[in-house]
Image 1: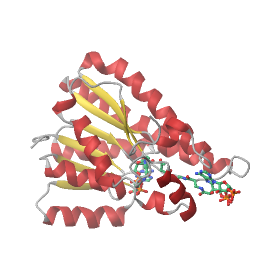
Image 2: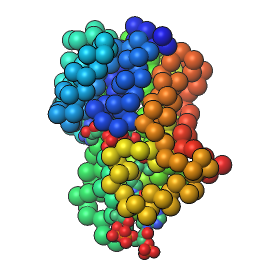
Image 3: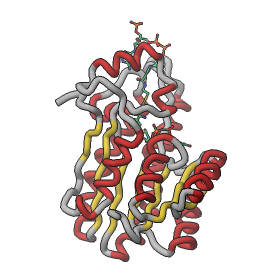
Image 4: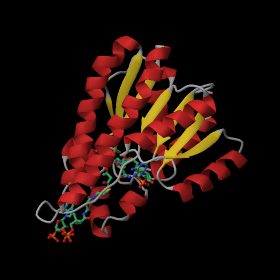
Length: 246
Ligand code: CAA
Ligand code: NAI
């Protein structure tokens, strides 16, 4: 058990990569708060995972709303008494070419993918500082590292997440807190399923492994960065993309 006795919050934990991470972390002994906007999926998955014997609690949250985040943290403390690990995984896309992107869609992606990460980290940090140990893992993307057609808003947030990760690693290292990021490549979830088929095929062809990632591939990277095995890894951006650019 690599996370025994640990308390983990995973945002966006009701679907896709986040859900795979909830299962993976629970299987390694962590108690997990599945923090997600999607109440239907959250309640359903909580029940399914509990039936399998895992200690998982669904809490509804809108990461873009600071009050909602504070309530989610309050419920975490009420339920499990402490926090050890935060996985900032919730994210959305509103893809369009720059020429056609609606300002409201630009802003909405910033609110969730950027302000949401700030909100959750700032709300959790007092608990980690008090313990003198903790792990924060943020979710960037190949789009943030290399740019991507149709993703002005999304790529901006995912690049910004790298900047915040390195800044927090420098600010919080002396408090015993590691802050790292994972930059997934194209991974088989609802987010990618929305893409035109032709572009998915194009994306696969530039991946050295010639396939999409699976949610579990990303969950395993979260696990490494959350476990004691990565205690001397700080401010790192781990690319889990099958080899796109090397
Ligand atoms: N890479 C390369 N070329 C792309 C592209 C991409 N990602 N997206 C679109 N194009 C090309 C199209 O093939 C098309 O080329 P042609 O004119 O030669 O046919 C041209 O750009 C215009 O595209 P559309 O005709 O589709 O234009 P549109 O205005 O109708 O739609 C769009 C634009 C909404 C961006 C749509 O093309 C689209 O959804 N593209 C996919 C965007 C994408 O890659 N999103 C990633 C989602 S997954 C994710 O975000 C997770 C992650 O972190 C990677
Ligand atoms: P997904 O769409 O399958 O799941 C995202 C989850 O986030 C959903 O459960 C959704 O309800 C939740 N969510 C959305 N807005 C929220 C909000 N305001 N508050 C709380 N929860 C909210 O997406 P996927 O693919 O699992 O993505 C997870 C993370 O990985 C995202 O940050 C995404 O940007 C990132 N990523 C995904 C890649 C992919 O190819 N799927 C590639 C690179 C990064």
